[in-house]
Image (cartoon, rainbow, N blue to C red):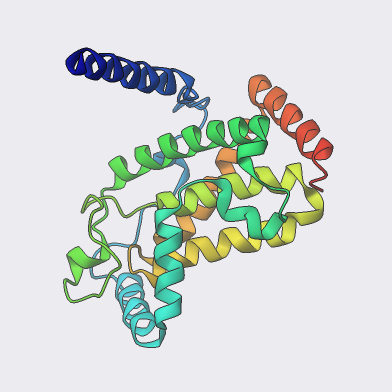
Length: 236
């Protein structure tokens, strides 16, 4: 009897797990092809190893390491771990809860798929070493990223593609939204995960991703649905 109950319970747990997996939103595919946006043709190459600019970027990381506080590092680590549009909640206000805004959440998912695909193509093309590869003595927040994946910054590409999209959705909050994107990008410097030019490239690529997506009819339709949803929720 006890065995029968255990088998039944196991079956119910398996069913619940399957139902939960089924309920998950499907992963979005990128709406942008290489023909739409090729990072290799859009971004300038990163500074050459040993160049004046490369040396200046390493000096900047050492200066940041000296000046940053424990609170600065904690905030940068938090940004490093948060790879979604929730980072903009403080800039938009309490009504920006993606769990209650499915149309907006889907729009951000579409942006995320496109920007990650573009940033990954750029990383594969340029294969720039991470800062700690060049200077192992740097006190980076973590070293789990691929060693030759520094340019452009993927986190910054995400922040600026989502930020530029949200700034269009909620024009009254555009300035704090983009300021938050800039702080998010700066966190990659504070954590010594990226060089300055990686972040600059991520800013440019992210804004371009948002621009190119707006030209896609399917994206424009989802944008309109999110716009209607946010207005109904009082997010302005």
